[in-house]
Length: 228
Ligand code: DX5
View 1 (cartoon, protein in one colour):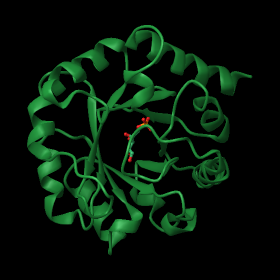
View 2 (cartoon, protein in one colour; view 1 turned 120 degrees about the horizontal axis):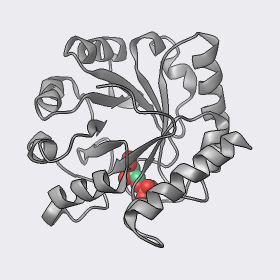
View 3 (cartoon, helix red, strand yellow; view 1 turned 90 degrees about the vertical axis):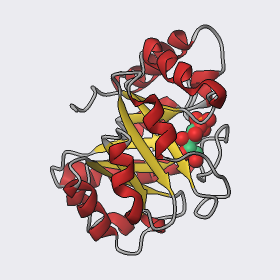
View 4 (cartoon, protein in one colour; view 1 turned 180 degrees about the horizontal axis):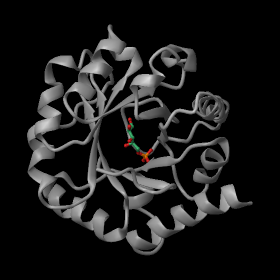
């Protein structure tokens, strides 16, 4: 599946009404987002528990958007094929949750999908400098993972900028995504720091106007920030 244009707006379905997740995913597609993120939490790597591949698979056929699985799980390797079978074209693992990151990222690509690696706020960029050639996406968390509706950590701007410089400096074709607290008031700072993909949850499901208005407002704020 081709990489959506920048800014890439990714919708987290964590704030969706789980009783009608399918309708929520359809609403997001109609509202104009570029990709759907499923926040997979195991109650161990993060203090929260969400859903498995069968839930994601149940919504796969309802929309044409790409699916990314943000795997906030310890040792994700045994279940990697399950997320691919569920229809995810991008699997994102956490550098802190994997013992053999080089092997895990290589395995994801062997499964024929795109590989992503995520960094918690406290984790330095150096944790992934030796595997950047194995990834299609680098995710800089702008909150501590586990819950939606948290405040954006402005201090992550320096890590986003350093990631941007590392990617450009090595001429790599990697999406630079941010996730957590992304909204109309914060997306500009992340875009200016060099992010190209923006995952938002509560800012899409709550706020003024329709969901489509909120998507357009985020896109305009991101574009405006880098054009300025
Ligand atoms: C948090 C998740 C995020 C979260 C984003 O661990 O990874 O995707 O759902 O939600 P907001 O945009 O509300 O911070």
